[in-house]
Figure (cartoon, rainbow, N blue to C red):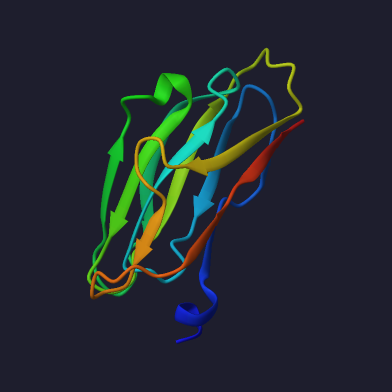
Length: 136
């Protein structure tokens, strides 16, 4: 019930990685049965995105990914389930010769609209908060 009054938060967990390595970020749908969003990242620093479910929750989840704009740093992501959608892991290759020490990962509505719903398909209030990858 608190989720309907105060909203939930879907966030990118911050990560630290060495250049020329792989980094994984976790996105938790915060108890929603379905969530959709566009994940934005700097494609000159992060490449080779692999998106997968890592926790199905009480019911199997379905993950749909639109890779059509991945070269421009955008992934459209939709996860849904009958009850609670599972967590999502996005793994990137970090470019070896990047001079960046930190890069942001955020959300937008450009491919998939940022939204979440309950098991009855009713929209629930949710905040989408980006994170960062620190490159050592």
